[in-house]
Each structure stands twice: as structure tokens, then as C-alpha cells.
Length: 438
Image 1 (spheres, rainbow, N blue to C red):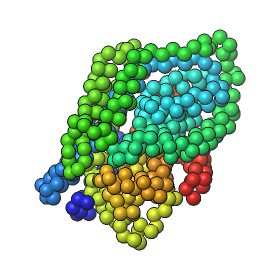
Image 2: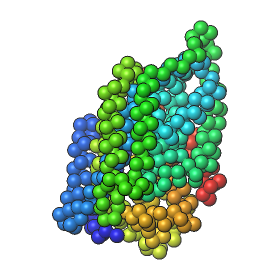
Image 3: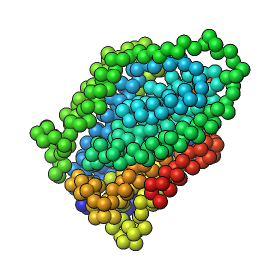
Image 4: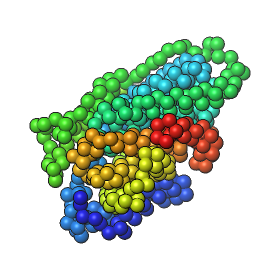
């Protein structure tokens, strides 16, 4: 394990996460203009301390390599999805909406929560254009922007972080499918009960309004999507002989990232411009993610090390059960970003059993043990609870912004929680806990 830094070096991480949580709400003007400087500045404090005071630039460079892998995948998924415009003109019915959301939940695992949210929110709004209500958007956030992405590392950023740390690509599908199916089934049933009460359409003559056609522009972008997804498996830790950078025994990929970023560039260059204009495509969301996550990745280094160190204390480690891992990961994912929460809880769990999150072999050994339900619990908690607030997962605010611009009176931060998350989503999350992790 790397040398333990002073505890004060954890504070840049805490400060950054608090600002991410409260900045857009209470410090909106300052945060909008300066969040890039804050993120990079706090990350630089940790980077320079490790390099100059602890003589450990290698640790920070490994983390930057993981960040590049993380952001390059998000970029190709975001750009490719943003150039696909789907026009679905069918009658709005509860069963139609349920089918749409179920298929969207599946697709989320190929496009990621960000890509699927960008691609599908406007078609979903158009389907319900004659009776569109805030709850439609909220349940879309529940299902497409969060819960749906549990089955693959592509689906949600926390799971891709796990993949970068050594969790096999197929592990999530094999171990989390029952949790996904139960949660999606329950939340769709709740949505059905809510949606069938919306009788606004009864006052509208829609007999000649629907063509029952599905139109997709920008189909060539599916090729770029496929390239981005396939490139994930170009991993020197999985395939011998691939070019890589050897850093303290870990094989750092760069061929995969070159392919993904090059694909994003050519995808944007040759995308259907009409499709992108129809989607009101902008690089602002991915730029915001890129700026914030460079700070998160760097400031997280000392926090992860201190959590590992603390979890080695028997008084603490004995309190960490499968249920605690689910709720701990979930509660913090709902008020902080779920990707760093996942890594922090994973670090604690690994340390409980004498392993380190910074060692690929340790992660592999842990996955061969009888304790993998801990990883299942923290993965499910991180992904599912990201839907509890607007700040739990990046696409949540993105979808809210799109709906606001379309004239939907979206609930405020507090209203989202007490009107929708607590009465509709939390009972589903409790059932998942009782069935699988109690």
C-alpha cells in the first residue's frame, strides 16, 4: 500500500463534493463561472503534495490514467448519442410509456445513463406531449438516468470505475440482473398506477394527431457507438501483447483511449447535422463532467487511502455487513456523486478483508472469495440511490434542464425528494434491500 498521507489532505475531496452538492443551488453564479478552477485547483493541491512532499507522482499519474479512460468512454457515448435523433409518434398510454421505459432501461446499458438520457428524453416527451406532467420526467430520471444502467460497466459511471479497478465486464450482468429486474418491474408498476390517473388526454381530440411512425436520423452514429463499446475490451490487463505503460505492476492502457477519442472526433465531424440540431446538441454537459471529475479523481486519492486504513480496524470492519454496504453506498450516492461514493465504499470493503483497491490482483482475489455480495450490494446502492436527488447522478440535472426548457414545471430540489423520491422510489429500494441484502 502507498504511504499514508496526512488526514488534512482528505479535506479537498470533502470540500469539492460539498460544492458539487450545494454549488448549483445556493452558489449558482459563483459555481457556474468558477467550478472549473475550483475542481482543478483542489486536484492540483493533492497532486503536488503527493509529488513534492511524498515523492509519489506515480500514484497521481495512475489516477490520471484512470480518469482519461473514464472520460474517453463517456465522450464517445455522449457524442454518438447526441447525433442520433429519434422521432416516435405514437399515442400516449400508460402501457405505451411502460414499454418505452422498459426498452430504454435495457438500452441504457449500451449507451450509458448520459447517452440514453440525451437520446431518449425528447422522444419520451413527444409521446406524452398532450398530457406531459412533471412525474413523466421524474420517472424517466428514475429509470433511464439511473436504475436502468445496472447491468454493464457502460451503464453507469460507478460500474465503469469498478471495471477500471479490475471488476470483469460481465460481472455486473451475471450478479446484478435479479436486482435490476425486480427494481425496474416495481418502479414501472408504480409509474403505471400514477400514469393511469392522468386523464388530461380525455379532453383532447387526438384521432388525427398520431402517425404511429418511428423516424431515426443519424443512423451512422450507431457504427461509432459500436466502435466505442467494442474498444472497451482492448485492455492490456485482459489481452497480452497490447501496447501499454507499466506502472508499479499495473498495465495502463492508452490504445483504447486513443480509439475512443478519435472515434468521438470523427463521429462529431461526420454526424448528421440536422439530427444534432434537433437534439440541441452541446458539448457543455460533457465538458462539465470532464472538469469536475479531474478534481474528483485526484482529491479522492487520500480519501481512499484513509478509508482503507480505517477499515483495517476490527471495531470498524466488524460493523460492515452486506446491508450496511448497500445503505452506506446508497445514502452517500444520493447526496454526493455516485462514482466516487462507489470507489470509497469499495475501498472500505476490500480493506475489511485485507485487500487494496489499488492492486488489480487483490481485486481479482476478492472476486474469487465468498464475499462478493458486498460488491453486489454497494454497486446496487450506488446506481439505484443516484436517483434519489438531482445531484446523485450527472444526467439527472441534464434531463431536468431539458424539461425546463420545454416548459415543464419541474419540481425544485426539495420537492423532487419529498414529492417523488421518498413516496415512490424509496419503497422500491427498501424492497430490494429486504429481498437481497437484509
